Amino acid sequence: MLNILTAEGADYIAHCAQPYRPNDIITHMLESLPDNQGDLRPPQRGGSVPDIRIRPESARSLSDPRELAAIGHEAVVKPFIDAASYGLKGATLIRELMRDPQKLLDSQLDRAYVSLNDDLADPSRRYGRVWMEAREVDRRGSEHYFGDGEVTIVFLPWDADVESCYEYGFIPKWGRSFAVSTPGAFVNKDPEVTKKLFIQAVETAQGYVDKILKENPGQRINVISYSAANGGGFFTADRLPEQNKGRFLSIASGSGLGREIFASSVLEQIKRDVVDLGITDGEAYNSVFKDEKHGLLLPYENCENLGDDTVIAIGKNDLYIPAKFGKEIADKASRANPRIQVVEYPFGHIGTILYMSHLEHLKHMKVVRTVREELAPEDVRKFDDFLRARNIALPAADIPFWVSVSKIVLADAEHMNKSNLVLSQPEKTTIDKIADDFFRAILAESHHKYATYLSFLSSSVRGKIKALQ
Image 1 (cartoon, rainbow, N blue to C red):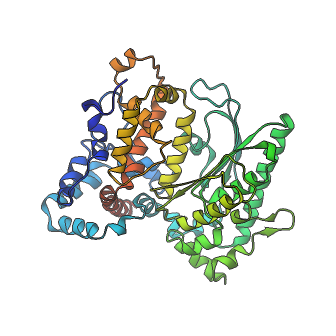
Image 2: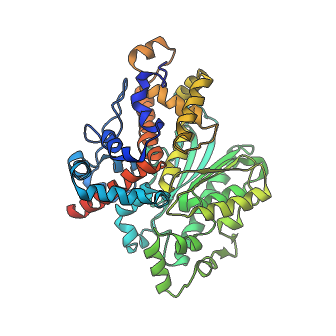
Image 3: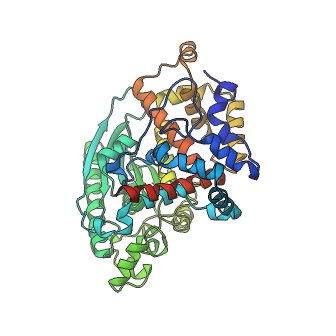
């Protein structure tokens, strides 16, 4: 297999590995810009990653986070090069952005997607989207994944459909899954609407639980929940029979929707709509979430009976759900069960969701396990050093998966033939997409110099999108 630490791998990860002097920032950013539309990485050796171009009809959608990095060279990047290289305006902008690195601690990826989503500026577009989608996805017998015996209930991110979530990897592609969508109307100015949709979601999930346990009373049931859908995840995982508790993965959660609406800059317009209804704070909003049949509904009230195999993943720089709310529920859950794992990542809301969903897939991919078992400890150590040199600390258990991904992406035909690794086209496509996200969007935004570039890019994108409307 190709050693990512040799010269053959250096041009792929050097931009992640090297420290930079402040006065080199313009030069560095110019060198990092794409040679062709849709690729922000240096040219790689070996396999290729498909170009991803933004589609005008989906410009305001969050369905594919890779599209942020692929607004055309002529539309966005070239004006930046011209300004940064020749204009006082560009130099002044960069100086201002670099003056206070603390300003870059929030997620530029989150900000960019807020700017592309008109529904957040005018949430009335979502208040009427009450239709909920629920679907069974059976991937038992997959030749590319482990986990045939796993059964998982998935509460999908806000306003995302099942098909898109499956294609992008938010739903397991192994075993048997039962996916429940979170309608656009869920984060609503009227908490009664949210309550009704919440009860519908957890009753749907309970129907799946009953079906699963009727077929196999001893089946362990996994639960995955994302973002605003974590209320359903906590409610379901907390109430599973003890012998049926599988793995619970909570990604980018809060403790209760009302307080998050009042604290999140992303949800500012929804907060205004809430206040217009006479609801003055988050506690008043949350007071609605109790039910005679189901009891207390907030995540914070359903986190003291979670199983040992629980992971709560928090994005430190989350703009949608401020990290303090994730820490609040994690602290309460950990007091009840000290074996629960709480992980804080240096990403925003979207970055954390992408990272965790991708990591789950890597853990289940047969090809990744094969490569991971052959890794040299030195490769893993040096890769971790690369990240830490950029003040990025990932859990030690995560690092081998990303080293494995890098090796697979960088391997050319000769190296593949010399190894025992057989890589199918579907596997290659999945690995390429995951690597693309990790190196070009998730990892990049966590380093303040890359965040500077993304910040400028998001501002440019906002202007270009408005110009196209």
